Length: 264
Ligand SMILES: NC(=O)c1ccc[n+]([C@@H]2O[C@H](COP(=O)([O-])OP(=O)(O)OC[C@H]3O[C@@H](n4cnc5c(N)ncnc54)[C@H](OP(=O)(O)O)[C@@H]3O)[C@@H](O)[C@H]2O)c1
Image (cartoon, rainbow, N blue to C red):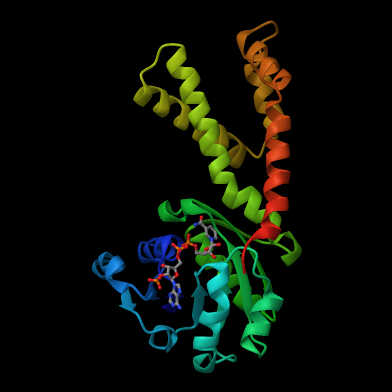
């Protein structure tokens, strides 16, 4: 059984705790935040709660820091004297905070990971990109294993963490906006909003599974549904004339530039 402490029981910390509480492996989980009354519902899932960060990280093997980037310095200052750098592993999920900055807050060297999940972690369907410093093969396997319980996880170089934030974490919002726009089109051509949502969402899920399970390039699946002179290619080409791919690519590039402005 792995002991995991999550410091910062907000949206993401809570979702990770709940995901791990329902994982196939056995995890002993403790969560801390100052306003602990807000997350009392986690107790019923066997998760220990505390407003004392030092108590939270005591005896755990893995410390997940799930606070806002600008809260990171204060939280590390509070817990660093209780950290055992030779037996514990630190995992930060804070956007834009580098491993070098975490090391500078700590003032000592230890295995440090950055992980970038997305909100689908709540239903254990996250895409999580992970990078690390001073870690062993076993430690990397352990951390990837934890996030694999919450969806899919891969190791990447730290210089790609911001790009992974945009494509994976912001990407949830881009995909949802695509579904909403499909719904609006669906309503215009005859469906009520509930039915349009079901059709649009399940269709996106099916498209994603075709790629994930089949390992194909999207264009080869598109070829299968674009009959010459048919309605799919007519609509698809009109979308491209209106800047569909271009607007998505430009939006991703704009999000990437905006990451530098995150307050730390
Ligand atoms: N949401 C996402 O989709 C997502 C995805 C990937 C990464 N992230 C990153 O994950 C981090 C958390 O995001 P979030 O959306 O979960 O934010 P959030 O809901 O604001 O959660 C942050 C939590 O930290 C707690 N906290 C603040 N100071 C603390 C302290 N000194 N000791 C203990 N707990 C403290 C806060 O609770 P109290 O005020 O009660 O202490 C709050 O619940 C951010 O760095 C974000 O960049 C988020």
